[in-house]
Image 1 (tube, each protein chain N blue to C red):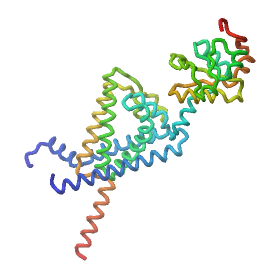
Image 2 (cartoon, each protein chain N blue to C red):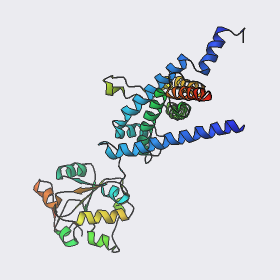
Image 3 (cartoon, chains in turn brown, red):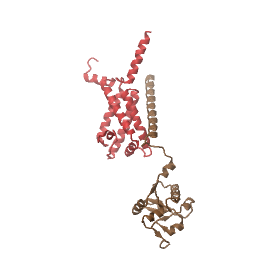
Image 4 (cartoon, each protein chain N blue to C red):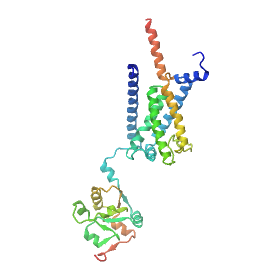
Length: 165
Length: 177
């Protein structure tokens, strides 16, 4: 390549890089100021957004569609009252990684709805975190009103020990 | 040179840079600037269109959607105004080449969806161009246009040309001082 051509090519590449850098800077500025722009979200924040709060009515629809209900409360509370067909994974036990808990439901091709007592109980969020730590990447639905809200809306609640248990 | 045909002369003049080259440069530049600005009004929708092509991993689609519209806008303005024309034409050629390849892959896959090319709905025009062989053909025409602008040695009605004229004038003046 002749020295003149080399110089022209180098200049062309330099100008192209300047344009690309300007486009990158404008893109970042656009996203920072645009109401419909993209924003950088940390991985934990993104994971937290995968925990979707739902109402009792939405949970009812999901139950009809075959969703797995997971009760995050203590064993005694679960024994007393629960959503029919629910699985009991006490949040504190899950967090402490108590042996003997069956997380096989995570592999089922079904949506998961977690619930605890009511809107203020933190067990659902705690269990969701423990499930995430097991590498579960799909959306987890959290019954916002808890079991009390579920029952108040007229959805079925099973009481007492289960048959054969 | 004397026995050159009229067509050959016209081709050479276009390749060197004449009014037709200016027309191509300004038309393609205005088109790029408009599409870039239109896409910048709704980055999320453009991100969805990028993802629909199924070429980039979905994690990269937002980055492409953030980068491509400002690039189109800058390239378009550079071509219309006529500054850094060769660099802008080279990048526009590259961008159009990648886009044409993405369209071709989807045509080969048998896909047909809104290409998201001009965002004409923003002007109230209900024309949605679909990914298909016609789009590849049209892109080839645009590629030829960018290649012509890149190849041209002279750009009439351009800021570059104006600056060069002023510089040469000044040189001419200072020569006799």
